[in-house]
Length: 344
Ligand SMILES: *[C@@H]1O[C@H](CO)[C@@H](O)[C@H](O)[C@H]1NC(C)=O
Ligand SMILES: *[C@@H]1O[C@H](CO)[C@@H](O)[C@H](O)[C@H]1NC(C)=O
Ligand SMILES: *[C@@H]1O[C@H](CO)[C@@H](O)[C@H](O)[C@H]1NC(C)=O
Ligand SMILES: *[C@@H]1O[C@H](CO)[C@@H](O)[C@H](O)[C@H]1NC(C)=O
Image (cartoon, rainbow, N blue to C red; front, side, top):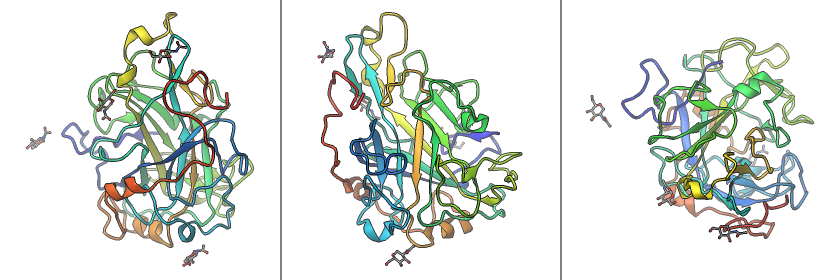
């Protein structure tokens, strides 16, 4: 499986023949809130076991039944494609000071998307041949990548290959702009040295669907990765999951610059970053997806093989997207120096 990074393809350092901004939707979704709920894995449980960072539509709630009409309920979204009321969420990154205190690491905007307020970059890709059709997600669809309990590589090799960290030792580098994710410059666990220009994690969701179920007990069984080739190259889906979906990718980037001072790092030489799951390996990274595009907007974009500029979709300014937010239902401190991770 060849997974490409798309974060900097506008620069001159692109690989000839590599993906360009014409090959995928790529947009910012700013922070909606940061709190301990999980409408997919622990619906109704308030607070949920660990902290998540949420972006997308403000229909977000601790319980979101598949029958909920999300685009009707939501009144704003933090995404710049304004018909996208989906919710996207992940684990939260903390820095553990050698004195034992924790501090949440702030998120930062991506290259070309610097104006966003926290949050992440979201991609939807159709195969690069601009011929292969994908079927947009159905109302109520949701899925999960990764597992908060992992402290070692995922037992699913495809899932393992679909998550990687990059430590930015130069602005958006050191690797070429549209370089393969998971190459020699990437790690599958937290990097062991400071990342002066930030830390990024990518997660690519499965792209094959069983065609029937909008969810499954583990939130994974209704989807699968291609059995051969790559999604981008039109790789074949398994017979059990024959329907090609758009490829959803989250790019989450932290501004680590306040935490690079070695005098704050552990004295034993270990690395100081920890996920909200109380995981210091990095393997518990997980991303949750709850589809919420209005009407046929996503299908329209995929049928038109939209790039970053997508005239068939409605847009809003990043300033407008930044204004959308929702007060957390769990009222607890998540910022500043903390004595313990929330819920841990
Ligand atoms: C990229 O290449 C073009 C054409 O060669 C040049 O005009 C432009 O200045 C370059 N941009 C950067 C950021 O190097
Ligand atoms: C959601 O509500 C909108 C507006 O009322 C309607 O057009 C759409 O068909 C509804 N979607 C579903 C899946 O019920
Ligand atoms: C750890 O260091 C931070 C930053 O100097 C400080 O604010 C915090 O109170 C310290 N924690 C403890 C337990 O001393
Ligand atoms: C990163 O954080 C530092 C403070 O530690 C701040 O000065 C800088 O502007 C931030 N950079 C971005 C891109 O947010």
